[in-house]
Length: 171
Image (cartoon, rainbow, N blue to C red; front, side, top):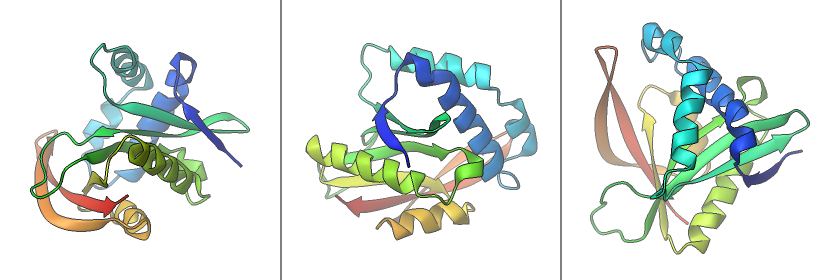
C-alpha cells in the first residue's frame, strides 16, 4: 500500500534514483545504451533541485511512498504547447516507478492523483508524450483512458532519432 504526497527536498535522491533506474530499465533496447549508461543519479538530483526551487515553476511533483520510502514519482502541470481545439490542457511530464515494483498499481495510483489535481486546477484534458517503441508504457496509458491523437515529435539521443507520440484523455 502506498500513499501519495508532494515531493520535497528530502525525496530528491530517491526520486532521481527511480527516474534514472526507470529510464535504464524502460528504454533498454530503445534509447541508445551509451545515453542510458551516461545517466547518473547525482546529475539528475542536481537538475531536480534546480527545478524544485525555480521561481517560475508551474509543475507539480508527487511521490508515492511505500514501506521503503519513495517508490514512484509523477510530474505534471500545464501543457507546454498548444493543441488545436483544446483549452485548459494539463500534461503529464514524467511518471516513473521503481523498476522492481512495476505492475503493483503504483503508477495507476500516481496517475489518478495527478488527474484529480489537474482537474482541481481547472484542466479539462490531460496530454502526455510517450516513445513510439515503448509498448509497455503505451498499453499502460491506453488502459488509463489515453488515446494517441496522431501528433508526433522527434527527439535525438546520442545521434539516434526517436519518435514520441502524443496521447490525450478527458479528465
